[in-house]
Length: 316
Image (cartoon, rainbow, N blue to C red; front, side, top):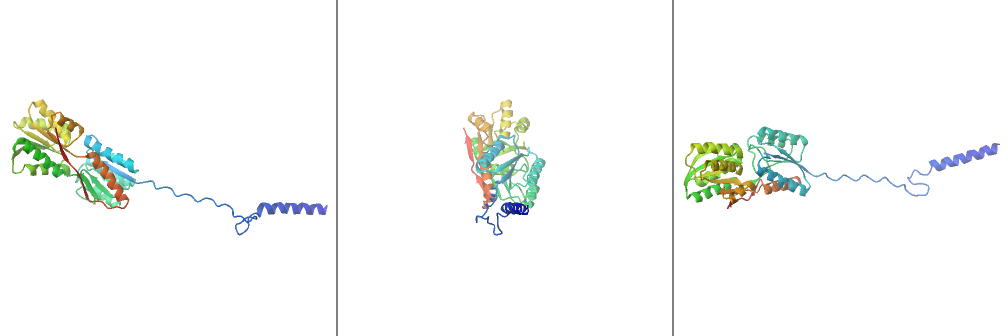
């Protein structure tokens, strides 16, 4: 009986040694092999850059095309683009900027509703360490890495020189101004008035219509009633020009109309002989160049503080 118990004890101890003693203190098992290590986790790929785009409005075809150009380029470059519409409201633009700052985007593209009103928002982005680039319209303060736009002064001169040529250097002209406080309105007006200075062209009425077609119509109706003689109209954008054109057609008067932007509706009106001309910007290209500049900044490259986009005059 004692021999049997001793044999059973030896058997149990042998099983225990096999189960528990397969790996030695040197990390090798009893065959001399090293157990396979658990593979290390592969670092996650970069998620890419996120760029915010605050745009002044999406009711104006020019800015719709501007946004489309930016979105197409962002998709091509693998950038996430967050587009927020300010609805031509400076307070909404400020709220949109604050939203993007809170989200912690990598860079903000902004097309200001008002060049003065946007300043505090640009400074807030600066304080948050978020780079800012303006497109089509500038900011009158804060640190902006680059301003990408057409040369509005040159475009205004282009329109003025065309009107001088068409009127033979003399006549009475109406100027429909864009949103007060925007550099686009200020610079286009500046270029136009520089062009006609020293000629016999007289500006008989100058009034803002806020870059809006309906307001352009209403303002022009009032001017037509108060001004018996008008030879030409220069509008700071096509939407106002097209509104003015409707009022002029309704009045039965023959007045030359020149716009700015070369939107599809305006170009069609020029081809139809209703509008005399429009200064062609390239909003799609402005949007594309804005995103390209953003990527360069985020990749550590330097960019010019002002990037011009070519203009041309569209006539029939």
